[in-house]
Length: 156
Length: 112
Image (cartoon, rainbow over the protein chains, first blue to last red):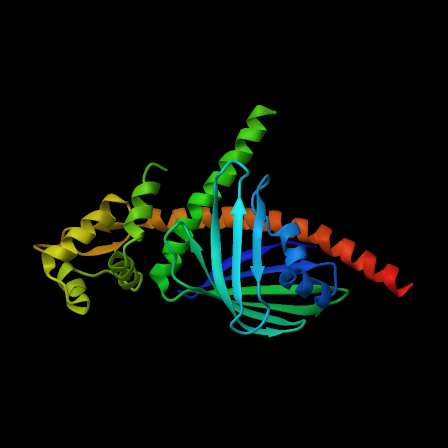
């Protein structure tokens, strides 16, 4: 029931959907409260998010730092554009790898869906090449996580 | 995946990203690419060489012209990465399921 979908749309969008067995209020809070975010937005297995700055107001700053526990890591900065409890969050973010990637404009919607919530996350990149670049740069980290998991499997 | 590093540095340059953006719309010649970017043809050719080495574009010969297009392998890499992003997100959201279950439990506890 919690099947995640992820697809590109047009030249500049990436759209992610996911269902949760909780109210829109809970899902919204888990996306905006620092203590809750640090419990789940930790990335690949074994990683943590030691820094989570999250000023939940229009213009408020976002800074997430991830660590692999061995001195490796990367961070993301951004700003909130709009917050509508408990249905909608609009923010801009960029990864630092360490050079900043072009701005990714993200609208996250939470809609009541039966007893649960349907989340729709829509990323908008400035142009087709930026989306290509984002997917290519993210690929590096995705690969790393996959190789790490593969190592676990092989070691078992 | 030995082209990954090359693809990464090729995409780090804003002009090359703009060239790819143009090629996403369809095939173009060096002359067609040089015009909107206000660059000399040798300068565009240097960028194209980097993109071609990184496997992001391919070129074919048509008389004296060598039109460029996005490489299908570049598109394949992106599809593969989408699968990995899906997995990374799925890990985050599976953890969120646990956080939410705990939140709703506490909520019920407060009501009672």
